[in-house]
Image (cartoon, rainbow, N blue to C red):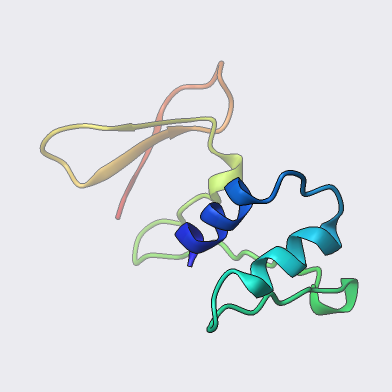
Amino acid sequence: MHGSIGKKMQKKPEVVTFQDFIDLCNNAGSNIEAVVMEMGDFREFIGQQRTRKTKNATLPLLCHICVASFRKGPRSLFFKTNFDAEFQSVCF
């Protein structure tokens, strides 16, 4: 599909507007049809991440970790939530 569209683009001297591109894609092959998405086709999701709890510890959210370290041997995540803080560890 992408190759067919690329070949059509090389043959056409100018693709100026988005409608030109849609027409080019529709004419690139018999089984190719451009789908134009409108604003109503998208949805804004609200982040609702929850902290995952293990038996003995609470894993931090990824957005709060600024440094992560993994060491050979233990199955622990060593992390910092602040660059100046000490490493904390949690077994996962």
